Length: 204
Ligand code: ADP
Ligand code: MG
Ligand code: MG
Image 1 (cartoon, helix red, strand yellow):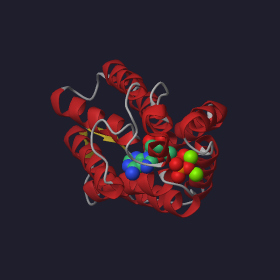
Image 2 (cartoon, rainbow, N blue to C red; image 1 turned 45 degrees about the vertical axis):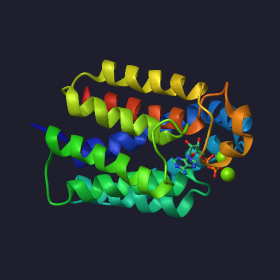
Image 3 (cartoon, helix red, strand yellow; image 1 turned 30 degrees about the horizontal axis):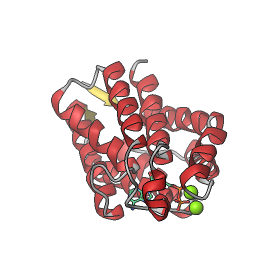
Image 4 (cartoon, rainbow, N blue to C red; image 1 turned 90 degrees about the horizontal axis):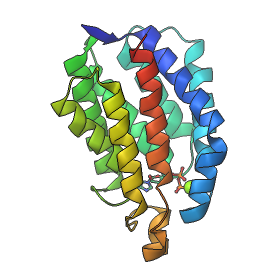
């Protein structure tokens, strides 16, 4: 069964943009605690640019939409998160190239995205980054049917909470060393919104 179309992918981006706009302040506050306080600004700007780019472009395939998303995020978002999310969407696009997106293709694409983040950020599990969420989502999808969105979002939420007690060893938060403990990672929160947005699209 095809689970992602061009139309749905555009709607996914629209849903992400709404969440980044609505939660800009929250992401900024999280980044103020352990980073430089621009994560909300970066995400809101990035997905606003993504929508501007994709809404008046015709696409042949889901892979083409995601390639456009990747290029826009990489080009328009400063900071660590732009190139990292850019890599995630580019890897998804590559995994979907020439294919219709059924459940298996989708799951493979999410795994590839997680691996891309890992490679680009040189991040592993437990380093208090958005990789933690992407890896756990990919692990979940390897075991469970993609329809169980509530369970998937619970995995995201539990992982965000897990980052609270981690000591950051990557990105700006790592400058704080032990003092990064006690705060959740901003990137894990923005990743949650990406998957929450996807859920609303998959359920329609
Ligand atoms: P910057 O830290 O450059 O200001 P953002 O604030 O937009 O960029 O994004 C910060 C988020 O990026 C962090 O919360 C973390 O999740 C993620 N991040 C930073 N460095 C890495 C890395 N090396 N690998 C994976 N994720 C990272
Ligand atoms: Mg920042
Ligand atoms: Mg910054």
